[in-house]
Image 1 (cartoon, rainbow, N blue to C red):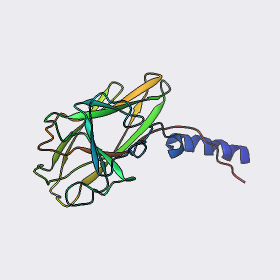
Image 2 (image 1 turned 120 degrees about the horizontal axis):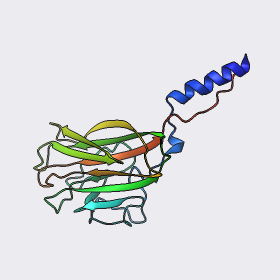
Image 3 (image 1 turned 120 degrees about the vertical axis):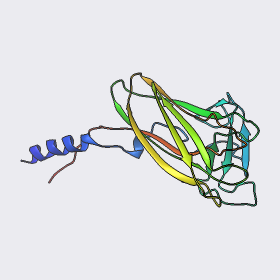
Image 4 (image 1 turned 45 degrees about the vertical axis):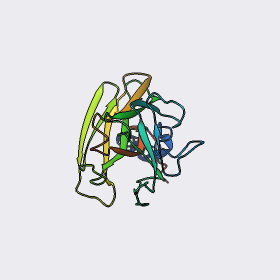
Length: 200
């Protein structure tokens, strides 16, 4: 009977299971760096060193702490003290970040992250976020009337790996003069990982 219950425990825990200990993304909350900005800093495109784990894309991104440069107003980050704005302050065109991580062909993975925007500082409260992973492409259109802080939304989706290494990209193609496209707490973890449940 105990063996039967153990087998059932393995089967059911195998159906939906994700563990933060299996995190595949490096520096998903943008906290780790030898030179973190005190307020904010612009990172140019094709930068592979300033933000460990990530490579910047397009015309770069803006790396901000939890206190913004405008009057010390709070950004209220979902995790840690730092966020990435894919709209580089000095560019009318969007930027992005990407990271590659090991995967097993045919295995299923869960992607989670927070994205947000704000209607303030001459920005119109909308944002367009592109997420590309493997051959899949997702577009998230954000909108808020909030002006006192970034309005965050939690997103998640799953994918099946087709390669031994998978790249995830977050980009925007909107003008930094009109939009904030802010990102934080990026996670990728394996799903359907079997675990045993001991039954006395």
